[in-house]
Length: 454
Ligand code: TYD
Ligand code: MG
Image 1 (tube, protein in one colour):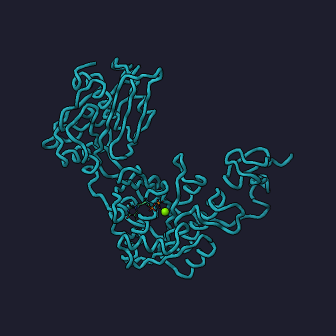
Image 2 (cartoon, protein in one colour):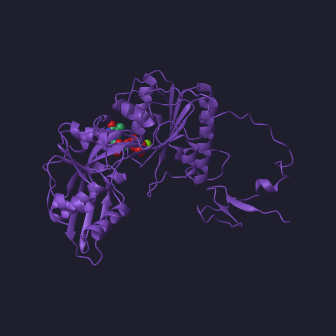
Image 3 (cartoon, protein in one colour):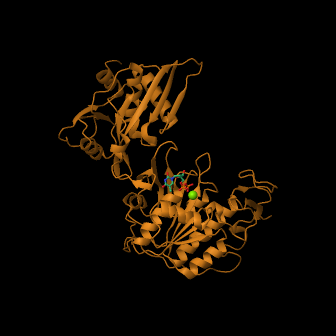
């Protein structure tokens, strides 16, 4: 029988059945190589004819101490890491150019170094003098961080081997080049090779490595997704250019909860931590206006209050607009459909705009009821009762379903002086002093009670 062959792209890893000059997945040239499957190479028990070594297996019950952690002292940063930096770990911090990644990591490096962690910062984008100037502006000139401006990974690894730091920061992975890979720096294969070398190095030498990665227009860290698989933790630094708020979000963390966020404010003197994000996100809110609804959300382990704003207006176009910022567009379409089908409230011929104030992104389905409330409030031109917060998931049948961590959501509302909560009926949370719970089982009752329609 003829040996079955497969071809893989050495740049992006895509597999194909036939050879071609250009990879269909990533568009690189001359990167398709032949690869024969393992089982085709030898007999039943062997790979290439030789037997492998016996691997020692262990029980699941063997007790394992939690990894030791080093805290930077920047609480918002430590929280996103899951409580501090873990030795021998590799982290990726992604974000748009200019969002403040270098600033954040320079500040974090200074904190770690001041706490006694031997820290080296390699910049491939800026000269040492530029980084030093920034450090001076941030008031960090005295921090015991070692600085290097280099893009050659071989030199960087040698330096790290001799310097023996406990933390190395590489800013950015897209500027690094590995001399054994032919393509240009920033290309998929270079980024992948450099990330692989650095993560392997971190494991071997027991140091923590933080990689900075730029994000492409479509929101992915430039380079193959495999970089995200290689590292232990992936953090995204996000925010709107025009806003001073920045959110550091854990999208993957082998050592802590994902979806944890840290909130910062970009000031003239660098990034300042925001320890009470709810107060910040609601700070510009005046008296309740039609279309404005406060949602009590959970980000990671912490409750955060944010404001949803909706605008509904007759459309001059044949195809009405559905514009969303900070929330999922298809989820909005679903809620509009449920309002129409279950409550008989159509949005045909109306433009719908939905925005989360402060540049925050909400991903929880628990915001469904708040979105529905904002849409109805805007459509009917009626404000929600003053001092009300809203949460609850909406199902396609029009039922209002209970959500997780109700007590935390209510406590945060209580802390910020809200007096009523519009929430699912099924939730068993205890009654909190000063917060009246208005519970609903389905959307139709909610619409009737709150807006007197339906
Ligand atoms: P930077 O950290 O260079 O972004 P990145 O590494 O993600 O590309 O941050 C650049 C922006 O931050 C720049 O537009 C200026 C602003 N900034 C401040 O507002 N205050 C400061 O103290 C610093 C250092 C930067
Ligand atoms: Mg930078």
